[in-house]
Image: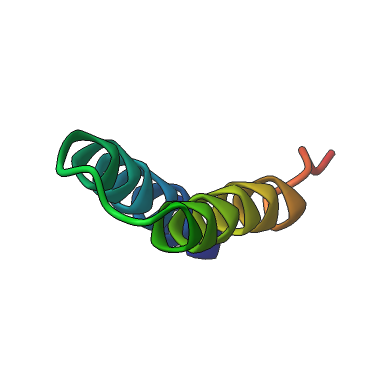
Length: 53
């Protein structure tokens, strides 16, 4: 469940990165948002449930 929330957050943040690039925002704000998107995606993979027997 938490992995799905993190993947959704990563998608929202990725959309934010695209919007920031299109609006010609500063590199710092684009970079911070991109790093947060990557961290959310990595967290989603980290909490991905492993198949149980």
